[in-house]
Length: 275
Image 1 (tube, rainbow, N blue to C red):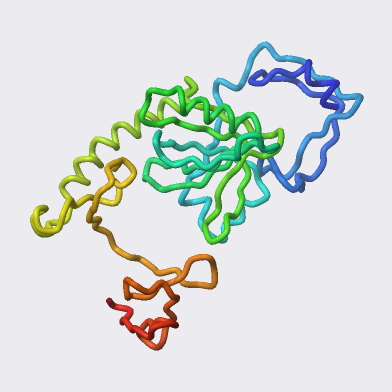
Image 2 (image 1 turned 180 degrees about the vertical axis):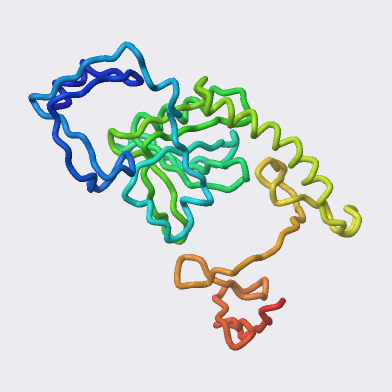
């Protein structure tokens, strides 16, 4: 069917469709939430319409990071659109040179500075890496159309491109990206002022060293001792590659929880959970 209709259908145009079948939309990865899907057959006919309805519709229906990617959300079977900003200079993990399968991993940020892990495969991975290398902007605005969710070990849901369905746009001149960039720049000015005014009043820098906010860590390039201010929300010490370490600097053994304290399994040093 693809070979027959590939030359007859152009993206962004409106068509009248005849002689098709209707089936339940129960595929593993669904491009929309509609109950049914239209299926082409060898008898299907398509006719381009002069009056397009696309100008009155939103081309992308981007999902919110916080609303749709929280643990337990049932979005695993539906493909969707997502938009976010990649900060140039952030870490990008990629396949080794010469690897048969090309991919890259990075984090997108939304307008509330929430992060979403993203994986791009094949040519989209190469396009992203090349675009980041050439851009002179501080941020790259990314739209992944028809993305799929994936679960990373120990983390919340992330997104990735899905076979031949997904499309990736990088800093393209479309209304969605222009609006996102404008809102991001407007919010960035106020957040910068807020970040500066909320800096903790610790001792003088000469006594404790240079004090920075966690948000400034990514732009810090010098190798030196720094103080960072933040609140520990939770400690992950489940069975995994990471574990709670001994509180004694010279010991690197695992510390296990005993009542309201943590005790080193090697040297026996204890420290309360509050400390």
